[in-house]
Length: 180
Image (cartoon, rainbow, N blue to C red; front, side):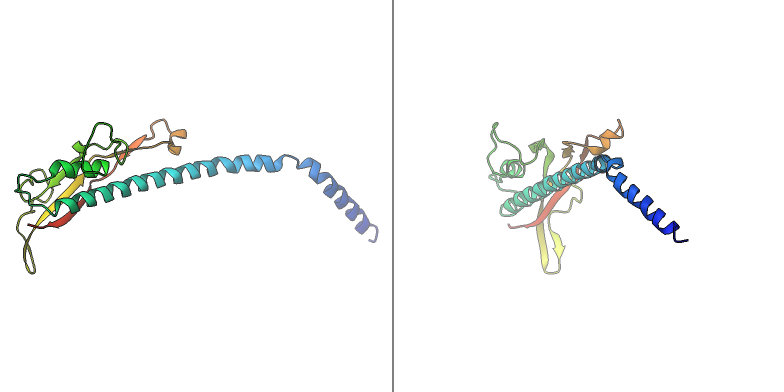
């Protein structure tokens, strides 16, 4: 029985000594196997971040445009409808051909304004004399419809040829009380 213990120790020493040569390159293979899903995950997170950033930009632009229109009477001749659309698209009240939109592909045709004077095509239609607990108010709403977010890199496209290259945001809108 005493002879069995030293023999197994010797065999273990031989295995330990041979292990580094036999395992050479295993770490590189493991890294390669893990790197593929990790890179796809990183690109997916970056694309999701870009989509959130563009959505947030559009939501802020719509809110700024609504805030500007809430200070004007829609029945006045100098109602700044075009300025509000430019503010929602370009971040400033004046549009020119050389301006770059706040989000790629955004146009003034995607911006709709709903107020007591023009509420045709607006979802609720109730913008004039809306009852509240302390009287009635008028509302103004600015809405961006049909904005298409385009992927810079879609990880799903690697696995499916029918993967989408873009998607359309839902309506982004802001409604505020209109001062008359």
